Image (cartoon, rainbow, N blue to C red; front, side, top):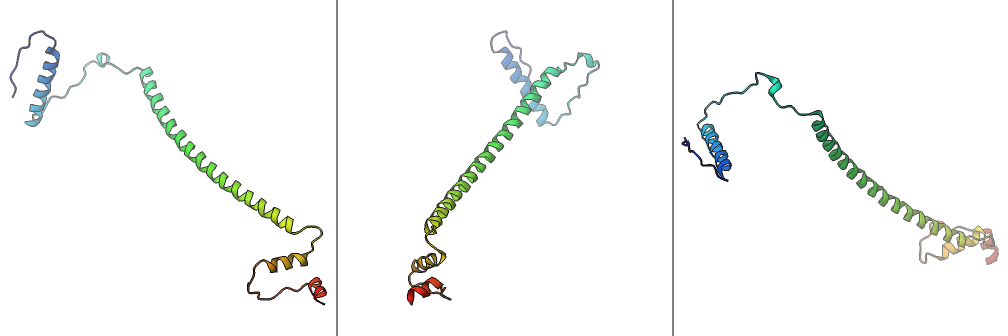
Length: 141
């Protein structure tokens, strides 16, 4: 048990007294001494928390929650943006293919000449059933 020390009035007196009190309580805790329970006889003398102070805490909590929600929304928007870029790329590829097909099929070309071009593109390709066209048979005769 620490002994009582009388302190002189100097700059360190308050710090030393706090250290003494903490040492006393830690000694009592180690010895498992039951400490008294404090209760207020007159509740009007107990300091209260003003509603304005509680509002500040509530506002701080709300701002923190809203920050988390905004961060989540930001990540969602970034994900949607990357998906839209992928869809736009696919759309551009489809437009390019459509343009290629349109250039292959022109008003002067008919379906038979298109088949001939398609057959000529893959050399050595195994054809299960060769397509015949009346224009092809007329040209061969």
